[in-house]
Length: 159
Length: 159
DNA sequence: ACCCACGACGTTATAACATATCAAGCGAAA
DNA sequence: TTTCGCTTGATATGTTATAACGTCGTGGGT
Image (cartoon, rainbow over all chains, first blue to last red; front, top):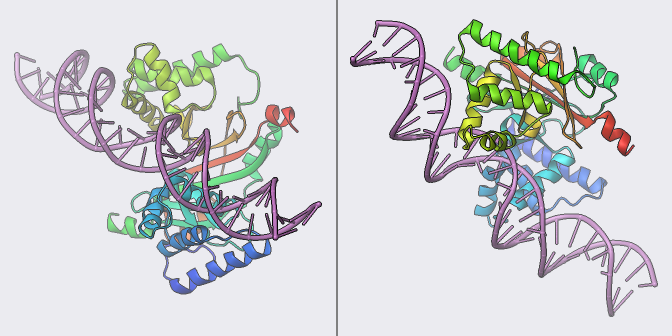
């Protein structure tokens, strides 16, 4: 299941697995996997694409789970903080993590046409960025890598 | 002048140089380096840090150069498009390019405390991101690399 | 059993960032 | 001189995010 994205897969299974993994991790770390948090993760897994906070909020509020922005932002903060969800800076949007079972520096391929997002991982930290940080005494805590371009489908549609 | 940032330098000189380089490049490519565009670049060079569009707009409007958001966004679009300015996705902010004379994939070190920004360059495009793109048929057009952490000053202030 | 500290959630309001649209000015090309 | 293209002016609105404050429920210490 490496480099998931732009490909077919058993989606019901994929959602169920991810949800139960999240549940397990929360139990283990004594985190509260509350209904709102669970539902937000479920929505992101289900759509399997980057979604804006307000897109998610629309769904939540249609289901009577809170209709104000802070509700969804708090849930997203929690999910991001614990690695279940990543924020795509380029889109101001959020997407479920494709490999939540281990720590990693995620990297994204974002289609500028259809906004589809594929997640992969990157080594980095070394290389020029790391050495620039060392030289200047900068202490890196987090790295964002996002590539923008055309996904196969959109490139095919108008090549 | 590689990896400028978090360091002392002759700032007046640095601004003058960058401005005249921009001017030259615009002349060469028949681009209009209009007063608003010039002033926005100058402001970013002067502050030498990431600034929000509305921070810049405040300054512009105090000087009578247009007081509505589109004015500054249009200028920023122009400057970004031609490589004089970079957008920092992590901050929804903008910063003058540290090496505008050649094409490059910029990478940033962003201090989460004081929002200072240092620019460096990165190889990338190869490595796992490139190979993931190849595998899936994704066509990369642009890459964003941003590291968040603590700059020397802020790390020193509370270590 | 009590209470109280803490974390989550509800709600209002507002801040911050960005764009659509249409009209007007102005210089260069035809 | 007319026309074209690009820049700017101006209004309105859309989108993303957070501040601030109150309430509620749970679980630990007494």
